[in-house]
Amino acid sequence: MPPRVTAVRHFVLPDLGEGLTAAEIVAWHVAVGDEVSVNQVLVEVETEKAVVELPSPYAGTVLALLAEAGESVAVGAPIVAVGTTMEHGEAREEPEERVPTLVGYGPSDAPPSRRRRVRRSHGGPPGTPLPAAGRPLAAPPVRFMARQRGVDLARVAGHGPGGVITREDLAAHLAGARPSAPAGERRETRTPVRGVHKHMAEAMVRSVASAPQACVFLTLDVTPTVHLVGRLRENRRFEGLRVTPLAVVARAVLLALRDHAALNSSWDDATAEVVTKHYVNLGIAVAGPSGLVVPNIKDAQDLTLRDLVRALADLADCARAARCTPADLRGGTITVTNVGVFGVDAGVPILNPGEAAILAVGAIARRPWVFANEIAPRDVMTLSLSFDHRLVDGQAASCFLAAVGEILSDPTNLIAFG
Image (cartoon, rainbow, N blue to C red):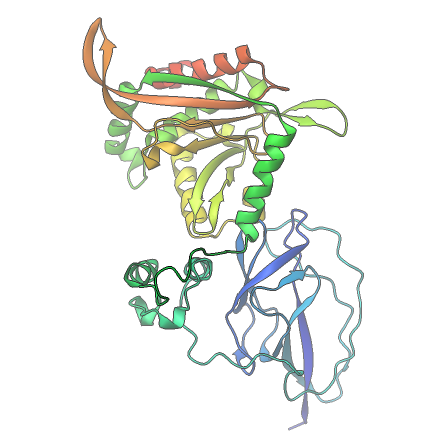
């Protein structure tokens, strides 16, 4: 059999798209000496938008991990060296390589191409991390939550299939934890602000600093909407779908935008123009494991109510599992945030940068209400609309909110509005 030699292939941090230039190493799924196959997950990285798993483009042996957990790495920088095999006599020099682009992400300008001289290697360079013996098994969101809480997963008992550590296992561990330090010794905890949390904080500061924001409120009787949701849940065409009042609110927003397009616009500082969108990328704020994220439903104006119900469920599942990509989180045109799920009646939401409006949906509560000239128990909700006063004046904001309320008060308007 012809002799074979080992070639060293360096996997660089891929282009994650959407203008992202760096990512932080969250956790390695492999150690030096491990055999890996093509498309096997090597590492989890966190961008300012999401936690992403990176698969291996090579099959071979891990020779070196070139970045440590917690380290920020630039796009195009090598993060792992993999030893691959090739026939004797093949070229020993790697071909000119580009920074790979992950499937599903848009391309961006790649850094200058380069060639690397491949050397024979039987181990990693000095400082190479040692293999992690008995590395606990856990899904990326669980690992992220553990890192945020400062929990060593090696100390958590896993009760999932094959000993996988689940959210419930981590929660039970946290609930059973007792402070080891004497009382009063540790008076505060400092947590680095990174990734999604850091981006959210920066976006909120930028939003308040750049856009003059105002807010209007509307409290209304949504009993007919509650009845409609109940009927839809029993309808065979919605079988297997999670029908919620939020879906009706989202549909009402989409219909109201037809006559109030200013709420679906943005301000272009570079050209001093108002950009009115003739499509709706409907953002839905979701509390995910790494913080609040706002993925959006692309071209939501074209969806039927049933399609919208399905899209909302898929979006929420994706966000709560930390599987949203940067593309999912970019390009929103208007946002809905459901503070009612936390038992809150109303609030003043802050605009997502680049959007003209955000609608906060309060909790639905049974309250005494004037109905048919009598006091009766009714399902009542409060809506609050924050808007960019450069793009939307008080009259336009109030008329839009009233249009949304009109649909929720009488869902036959779902048909009447077209």
